[in-house]
Length: 231
Image (cartoon, rainbow, N blue to C red; front, side):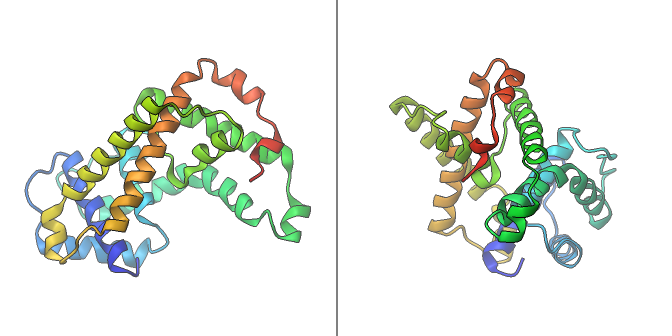
């Protein structure tokens, strides 16, 4: 978190996190500074999406950790959740790293197609379950790009319009959530930030509609081949 844009995103995430936990009283400026600085010092490699995902997965009870804040939203609670999230995210990170390294000669010689394919199938089954249970956030457009590249998406006018409306609605929510906290740091959501969030949420909406349309996820994963993973 080195830029004002990233800082604003972290403040947004912490404000929403407090609200989801039922802590409705306004956070003090001291609390904001302490929590933001703690995340900077101890979880500097985490981006805003990581924090949002950690928040959502912990509240949904998907992390192997006690997610009760006991009335204290501070470094102790935040570190407990973010550390537990590391384990939850490891499978995705492993796959993403292989994808990032795939163009280097060394990576090409060391790739294990079966291992990578199995990881992707497992990743899909989890995404499918989340989409049907609640809502799956397709951070990084992983499944959007996969489905589009392999001709698995049908873009009707109705789907496009609905996805755009959803994207605008979610971006507006993020712009308003925690606005008092942002004002204390003189942060504003810039036009390009809003457009990025709208596009990201719109694509996640499309992905969720696609995932929910797949009635037999196991049968679908049986049909995924290694060539379908190539960008």
